[in-house]
Length: 171
Image (cartoon, rainbow, N blue to C red):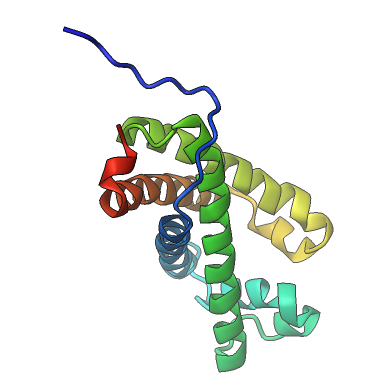
C-alpha cells in the first residue's frame, strides 16, 4: 500500500477566485453578525457604533458623529465596505492557500485560517490605526475572536467550495 502525503511546498497553482470571494463574504457575514451581537449584548452599546467606524474609513470622520444613531447611508456604506474587504481578504487567503496546498484538509485549512485571522487582527487594529485611529478603542478580545473566526470560516469555506466547484482539481 502506497501512502501519499500532501506536500506543502510552493507550486504553481491558481486559486479558485470565485470560491475565494464567496468564502470571504461568508466570513464577513459571520463577523458582522458577531459585531452586532458583541456590541449589543456584551458591551451594552448601540449596534450601529461599529458601522459608523467602518463607514468612516470611506466617508471621513463625519460618519463618527452620533455613533449610536441609525443612519441608512452610513450603515449601507459600512456593509458595502465590510463585504468588499471580506471578499478581498478571502482572495488574499486563497492566494496563500492554493500554491502551498494548504487546502488539502479541513484541519490544515483551520490552522491557516487561524494564522490569517491573527495577522488580519494585528494589521487592522495595530497597523491601520495609523490611518484610522478611531479603531484603537476596538482592540481587544472580541475583535480578536471575530478575526480568528473570519479566518477559519473563510479558509474552510474556500476549501469546501473549491473542492465542490472543481472536484478533479484535488488529486
